[in-house]
Amino acid sequence: MGYLDNSSITVDAILTKRGRELLARNDGSFRITQFALGDDEIDYTLFNENHPNGSQYSGEAIENMPLIEAIPDESNIMRHKLITMPRGTSKLAIVTANVPKITLSLGASTVINPTTLNFNGLNNLAEPSGYMATIADRRLLTSFSGRGGTSPARRRDLKRYSGTAVSETVMGQAISLTAINSLTLFGKNNKLITTLIIEGRDSGARTTIPVEISKVVVKSASFNGESGISLA
Image 1 (cartoon, rainbow, N blue to C red):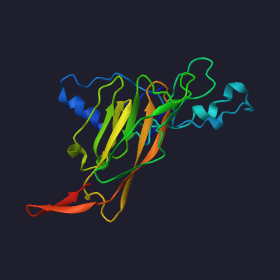
Image 2 (image 1 turned 30 degrees about the vertical axis):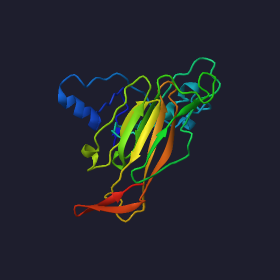
Image 3 (image 1 turned 45 degrees about the vertical axis):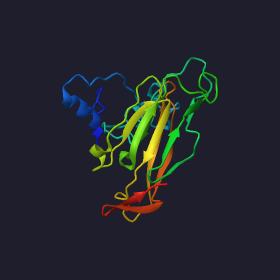
Image 4 (image 1 turned 135 degrees about the horizontal axis):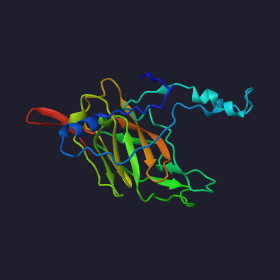
């Protein structure tokens, strides 16, 4: 991570690993259809209405803050996206996963059905365009997909990610997760921890919930001289 020269207007754009993969195909599958703006670097408490040089200098400290260069990590950049709310909005929308934490044993599955509070004046409403869900460490799941919504569900083979910890984002009205059924990543640990970020595609609101994969072996099994895990 580094800083950009903010003495002039700068747009710093980079491709994620998935973006580079699509671009390398050279078959037209790489298409930018959406973008977002964020203000992660801005500390609005520095706005000084009583600046000794006058009100035109109230934002001087903010304007001179360093800008962070782009990095392909959703957990460390674009965490505070700018959103446009209808005029007269008095309450900010709040996304809830309706669970405080996701805990899965080996091979277990669950489906998260997010809803949004204070969206269009209603509570517990599913947003029409659905939600974006980002798992911080895709290696911990054998299956991660979105269901329903205006975008098709996406499922991806775990093998291409098994060597390194990378995130993945899916879209849908509901989010399906299935934990790994292998002990390889655990080492001496009894559980593995990651996070799931859920963002409303209409409201821009987001929430982050912890995901815990527990090393629970129901019983061991053996077949043709090979041992493994048998799940109930």
